[in-house]
Image (cartoon, rainbow, N blue to C red; front, side, top):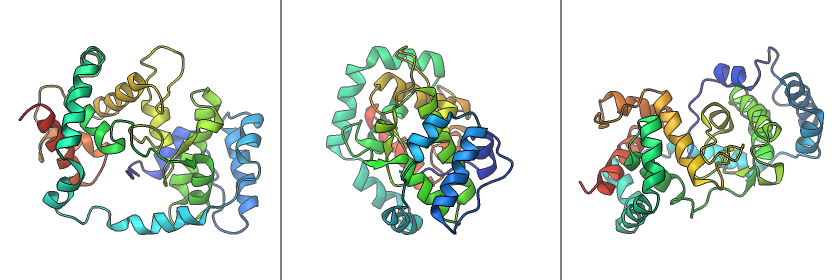
Amino acid sequence: MLRLLLAAASVLCLAGGSAQAARCGGDFNAFVASMAQEAQAAGVSASVTNTALSGVTPDPAVLAFDRRQRHTFNKSFEQYVSTRVGPGRINGGRALLQRHAALLSRIEQQFGVPRYILVAIWGLESDFGKGDIGKMPVVRTLATLAHDCRRTDLFQGELLAALKIVQRGDLPLRDLIGAFAGEIGQTQFLPSSYIKYGVDFDGDGHVDLRHSIPDVLASTANLLHTNGFKMGQPYGEGTANFEAMREWNRAVVYRKTIGYFADRLAGQ
């Protein structure tokens, strides 16, 4: 799910505060070389940048997909929710609520986000980690989008953040794969959100949003908590919690679907 929510300036600041963005368009190899210099200036090692960016080529499929995303949420809520929340997904979510009850209790206590909201997001984004979480090399995807001039500042920041994920040791480069806008993991975090909100909740020293369910759910809760979500408060349209979920997805229909799914999981 595309969640291109952060302003380009804040993303660039998160990625290292580069004062001089690389020039979009033109020769792709020159652009990548400029991005490598920016990454190193932002604290990414030469070994990481050289390994990650060596031989990278633009991906025309990424640009084609990007152009098709403008009308993703043109359906009504009724049309959209009927395709996303059915009996199978509700029953699957309820089973996971039971299986991970202790983990979800710990997350609720620390972050103040109800388990039903977290499991609803998990189900919508990747069918609880069993669905397609992307098969595309994140660095190539983001280099392609950053080189394109339509949203170059945003995706330059995301590319730098992706390199920082490798630099921090959260994911090895071979595991840095994701979806068509560089989203990573079971709840589809953009790299900048991975850096900003990621939580090592299993205590292994790494934030792993691809394989670690504790990290996935705690990081999702941390994003919502940081943006003002309050436990025990309503989350329907027009509420403060509904607005807090805007950091997750700006589309009203999507946030309404999260709430609807959460209510079904809770038996309402």
